Image (cartoon, rainbow, N blue to C red; front, side, top):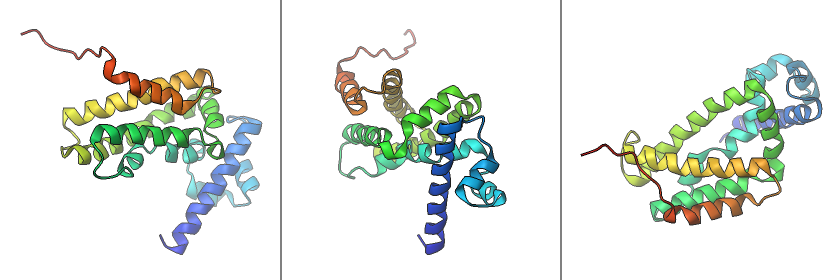
Length: 197
């Protein structure tokens, strides 16, 4: 990454941090792009060049954390696929509860605001497609293969179930909840849809 790209990435992070602070203090709907630009000490046109919409500011730190494919690609290449999946989810859990990323506060804003909540689905779909591509590489299958898509779906669904538990009580240990879910998974009575003979 060149100097210009590093500076742009740093500016993006700083502006998003300022925006999230304002969203927490004032409320998402009550905070304007003009207020964000002023607080970040940049022009409004510069702000819109980096972030064309307010929800993109909110998701800047969040989207990095839910980059599922990145966590899977970071696992050792010789690690068995199932272990790599579990390890990637546990690494993701660690990032998810990192206080510096303020995911808990961002989640509260998303849960309370209709536009970011709707936009989150687009972000998650994009991240899921990348996760399927990373998993396909590990499984040596095309991303469109059912084995890849179902395996990715199960892994992400386990994470989503744990997230729902944690959302109800942020004092719970996120990694512990996820580890419990992953430990119990092999003994569950999962039923796959099947057609009669």
